Amino acid sequence: MAFPQATIAITGSGGIGTSIARRIANGRRIFLSDVSQVNLDGAAEALRRDGHTVETHLVDVSKYDQVKAFADAAAASTALQAVIHTAGVFPSQGSISQIMEVDLLGTANVLDAFYEVAMPGQSIVCVGSGSAHVMKEEVPLEVLDHLARAHRDALLSHPAIQATVSPLLAYQIAKRGSLARVQLMAKEFGLKGARVNIISPGMIATERGRLELEGDMLRAYIEMLTKECAIDRLGTVYDVSNLVEFLVSDRASFISGADVVVDGGVAAAQRWKRE
Image 1 (cartoon, rainbow, N blue to C red):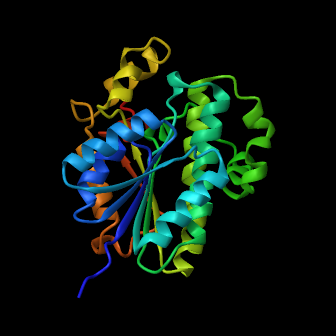
Image 2 (cartoon, rainbow, N blue to C red; image 1 turned 120 degrees about the vertical axis):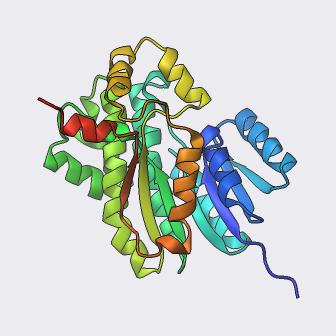
């Protein structure tokens, strides 16, 4: 008797997305999406060479209709076991509007679309950023409440978002908002028997991470992160993919609505600086 091949859905075909695919696929079918056809094709080819079954979808996560089509396709294929949302724009690699549309609205779109097809046993993991935990000033509660609760069509209309003038601040607000939305929706996913969590990586050694390190825009900020890191190295994609493997497994069946910081201790050091 032939059993159906289980499916995992991943947004973003960069270093973290492909590392996670390799780590958790284990015979599962991979539904992989990206906004770049070139990047998508390259990642899919590499995964197929490793023996994985991959179906690609060109998706701009800032467009709900595209995300919904991707979610519907993944859910209709076979048993959808896990959804990993890694797509995003870094502070030095996009405009303020792009960062908000992809990193904040994109996460809302992914959560909403995959909530519609959520089933018992599914695990959703969003990749946020440790940057959300090292903001110079905390997001006001009124703004945070908007980020968590606003319908996606009104999400970017708040004056605080429209007044943001720094790409780094936009990135931090977007990631803080993504964290809030994940926590808010944990109960809703739970009512369907599914779990949703978010991880907040620090500086990870990927190609995009390297571009951040080599750029001038965030030099002072990155120097602070490096100085505060309690572990004397950059994070690796394996640090992230190992955690995701755990969160989507049955070993994490009582974990939902959690934010796991994977930053080498930077956020902790920032919060509790030595006198």
